[in-house]
Length: 450
Image (cartoon, rainbow, N blue to C red; front, side):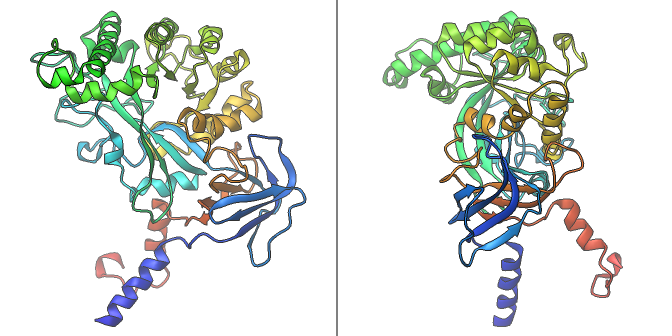
């Protein structure tokens, strides 16, 4: 019995990454993102944080040395908006926890749905991603599988709800996760934003009109302010009726107080202008996601100092609200002074597209440094995590990737991924399946596997 327990403990230890240690990455082109590149330098990690980096840094005695062999070292990439660890199989409703359902709207907190054992976390790390914002979407009340849009956003919307109150409009509250293997809790921060849609999706949720969507959003913000000011009276039943539940109103208070932003999913130029007008008149912070026609209103977005999250591959007019889509959207927005974060697919199993999308944006005019920042420092700033991750600076968490070449090229791949200074296993689902079925000696397998 004791022997069995010892063997089980040993197996668990082998499955987890080693503890943080002093590590020196040498012979590397270092891309700090927040400062100029170091053509040939050394980066030192100690106690899970970056201790030193530069062209003349000395390797500490006893440090584990990783030879980059002329490769590139970058901060770990950040997925700015995804459903990673909150969804598994797009067509199986029971595995999807990234949507609100019909009981909650703004109050839905996606952090409670995060699965640190998700099979897609290893796949994301294999693509150089070490952290992600996990952002919820508004879903309908149907019992079947979610309709799955090309961009990964769940589009099964409701035209309202029966009974009193406003229809649910908000997707819920976003979280930020770090992809450390073996961790039982990977949520770094929660309640970072409340999501909402304008345009076609928002219109469907509100009953069929963009105008109704905006009226109801403004009404919800007004109710949240009134609720915050008269909470005691509300509890005593001494206030007017509100369109949202107590939980939803409570979740919107940080939005109307300017503490967290609304993440607004929007495509059409006219709808983007409405989002900017909403932010200015309601005095709230916003982040825009999608912005396929953003280039048309780039100066206005820049003037409002609103960051955007976009997919540079979105260049086909697959809907009426995206007729102006074009491949140089990111370049034009950046040239106007907009902070641009680059997404891959929102979908859990396609996050590897993020770095390729950054490369595509460079091919269509976005400066290389801006593209690299778009997958690291810009999303870190959007989500308030830039004091910890997003660039290679002394004192920051050592979420670091060593690449065998230019990380924005399709032929380059990570050779080493560290999260908090700990080297991560190459344990994507494809690697696990390979190890299981390609073994030369299968004598120990059950008959069905031989």
